[in-house]
Image 1: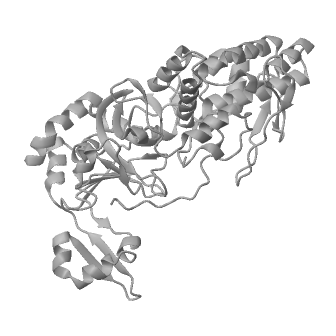
Image 2: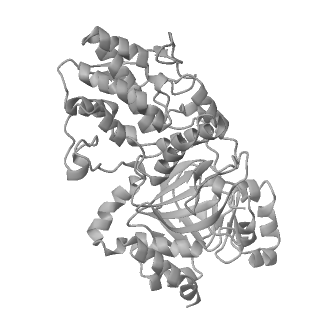
Length: 496
């Protein structure tokens, strides 16, 4: 019972803190889809919710109510005017940077009353509190259009700038081309489409209320917002760093879910979060800078593997001669836990067997993704003692990984603590598939709340800040259909 004695108390404490086992099985299975809510926003509580009623009732979504018959959809132009300040002359807005996905998003055009347009103008005036730039939304041009009265010109301009405001609050202002190694597709524009949000705001005559609902729900975002507004304008560097990291929150789903795992790469920490509270935290070792840097992902836990095997990459089997060594020295291979097979065409496959010396340690969390990134244990525990823990080939080595795996097996596969302990100490490869999956977020915040709850700056380990910071001093770019980085997907399946 060594494993249970070692981890049982802490695992049971985590489970008790979550309260999720009190749910009936049917509810847990229903949560599987919502648990993948890493990719879905939750129903908002206010009467003017911008999410479809279908998310609460399970019925098919109804068409968004149109505030007026005068509604048309039109593609945004390649370049449109934008004022740099309320009194500045109109200057061209930057078109999107060249790329593979440079098709512009379509902008809806709806009918605006003078009262709604004035509410939009007032909202733009206060949007700086969210770390956005009021001049991006053409306040001088909008004021002039309001003075000219209702009509097509006002409809076109107000719809366009409100569309931009929605996009920036919902999806982030930073262009995709300046989000380095960003592969976490934000689902919010699918769940909360611009046309639906705009129609609701105009139907309820509540532009400001709808805008308030677009902000990320995570309390860490609220903490950053408070710090941003409390920082003197003269402290430009601090304000710019906070502004960039507020935007990073908008790149993620608005609501991350009730139970999820999140690692902040520059902090070298993994969190198990339940209802916005950190239940457990674990030190991590992340990818070395360069080609083995850990990418930013939003995935789901599909299974926990106890006593995993490791199929060694060909870069090591062939490139470093491990295959020939295993075949040529059976006694050494047995001691090291390696087994090799050679196919008819001469390809050698090497698999490291389960055991304490396995490169994946005693636990691996499967979270299928094209990068072959996962969370896992390690026999090299000494690296957790370093202050800067960037030693891996991209995967996330996790402290107290067996404890974490047991917790996931209990919460996600309805195993008892005794069953999870028995599986973990069996020494045999065992894959425990999740019946309730959990989101996993691999994020990169260089100014954020640490695990102790205090706001701190973290070292820009992979030099990802500069493109984001630069984007905020440049004109706003029009949004395109691109949803993730178009950089090379590097398969990082080497835990060494």
